[in-house]
Length: 180
Image (tube, rainbow, N blue to C red; front, side):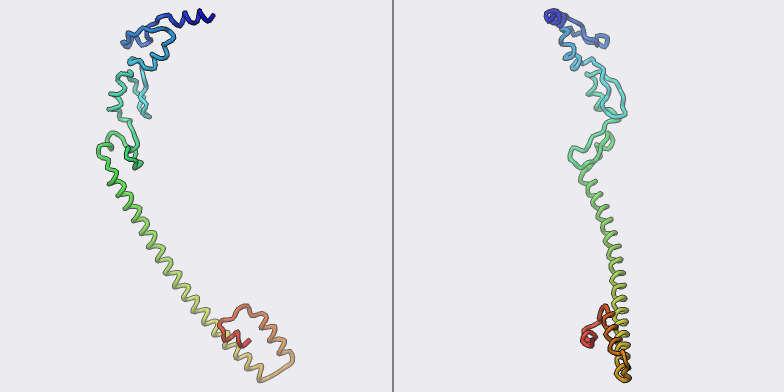
């Protein structure tokens, strides 16, 4: 069986691309090797969307003129080039334009953040002023209440004061905490 297969493998055959012009004759066992290098083999253009069929010997010439040719910039900028943009492509100029666009966007964002921060600081200043006024008002009321309690001592006054003191969550300044 092995001898038969070896004998068949040695049989000479002509290339399947004879109609396209190939005159090669080779052993059957070398058919795959020849067809993978035969200059008369039909190939599809590898560029996506092209679909042109060319002979292997003409594939290089087609690749030079294929309108579907695309390639990433060999300089590494990431731009996808085609035949028309390849000649006018300038990595430095395009990167500089992208950089300036991003820089302008960042400036706009920074400016908006600054305005927002200023509004927040202004609101905080107003809130601080209001808290200060509330604290002053509370201190005045507390002073008035303490003055009234000293003028008319009544039963349960001391209990009410300690209850009020226990209900006080914060003090406005150090002078009110020393009065407690």
